Structures are given as C-alpha cells and as structure tokens.
Image (cartoon, rainbow, N blue to C red; front, side):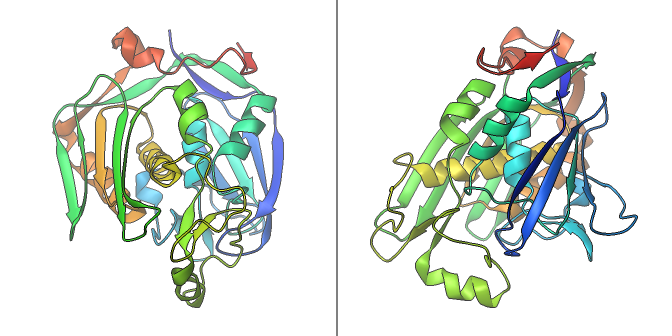
Length: 305
C-alpha cells in the first residue's frame, strides 16, 4: 500500500524572498489525510487559506503565485516541487510575508529540512491522476504537452542564445531518490543583462549570487560554478514539477516541454482539468507496482509510520 504522507513535526524556516527582498518566516505543520497542501498568510488578519491548486494560481511572471491582491503568496514552486519529491500530500504552510523564502535558489534547503523533520505515513491511500490521452498547449514557439505513461517522466528542453547554455535537454524519470539526487539542488538562474529590466518590473529585489546562478555575456559569475553541467535545464524540471503538483495528485504521465515557463505549465494544468476525458483519478492500490515504487523514500530519510 502507498499511503498519503505528511511531515512528522512542525518546523520553522527563515529566509529572504527572491522578488520581494523581504525577510520571511515559513512554518510547516503536519496535517491529516486529504488536507492537501495549504498556505496561509499569518501577517494578514483572518486571511483565507489558499489551497495549492491550479485554480488558485494568480500571477505566473517569473514565479508561481497563489492567490490575488493582498492575500497572495509568491514563489511557491520550489517548496511544492520538494514536497512532491518526498511524496508529501498534506502540510499547512504559513508565511509571515508575501513570498516563500528563496533559500539558495533550489530545493536543497527544503530537502535538508524534510530529512531532519521526518516523513509520516497517514492511514489513507494516495490517489493518482492517470493521463489517458495527449494534451498540448502552445505560446508562440514554446509548448508543453502531457501523454500517457505508467509513471511521471519530464522531458525538458531550454534554448538560450548564450555560450554557456545554448540548447539543453534533460529527461527526468521521477522517483523520490532521483529527485533528491538529480533535481533538488539545481538553482534558479538569470542573465546579467536582464537584471535591470527585472528590477524595474519590481522583481528579484532579493536576488544575489547566493540564491541564483547569474551569467554575464560569456560565463557563470558564481565563484563555485555550476552544480551540474546542465544545471539550468534541471532547474526547469524543478519548476515544472512544482507547477504540476498543483493538479493535486501524484501523476502518471509523460510531460514534454520546450522553452516552457510557469505560465505555460499553468495553461497545461488548466487544460488537463478542463478535458475530463483525458485523465482518471485512481487509488494507488490499483496501479502497477512500477508506478508506485517511484515513491519509495531512500533509507536515509527519517520516516515514521
């Protein structure tokens, strides 16, 4: 049996918001089965809870935002990707500001915290969204699609006119272990020539070489260099996974993206939900062992049953 999961104890995380530049505290608390991933702004009196669902996505400019107006939370994608990467379905995420802390620009800090906090199995079986027919969305020369597959696979391609990027492609065969080892440490990135433009738009106020890979016209500016030769496309997979998690279930399907971003991922998720014949929600107990085996946690993870 593959059960729903939560975290074993409450944990607090402090950091800087990438776009707001504000110091924020994120508190993660255990939650019961079928609670889902829920966010709450504790700095706003009586702020309604925001469920991490496709329907609640607001802005998708350079990050994924839940909610609109004052009651919104930016840059949820790295945390959501890491929760999915651990097979965690139920958590209350409380923040005292407008954004989840960026940490080092990847999911690595969240991985460390979840390893220390521990993962708890709940008494209810997971449900999977099984893709039954292909769905594709396009924006100019960018596109994303999902098609049937026994397990989640993400095939991502990015294209940038930069000598250190050019065209990068990575195929990620999802498992909790593969996520931790191959995807979680990949950092967000930007080109130095875009920094002024992004700041004029009110973005990346908290951005630095401590939380992003920055490239000048020729090279990576970070003293330590890249964590993977193709770190940038791996980060795109991290973003994609976080955005797909907003469908609300583990996924059995192959996702292929070309020059995609948060907006395109959100459009794909919306189109999936609109085409009810294209998917089926089933209990994990009815699926092939290969589908569920991907959610086995490495022995090093502190797991409580």
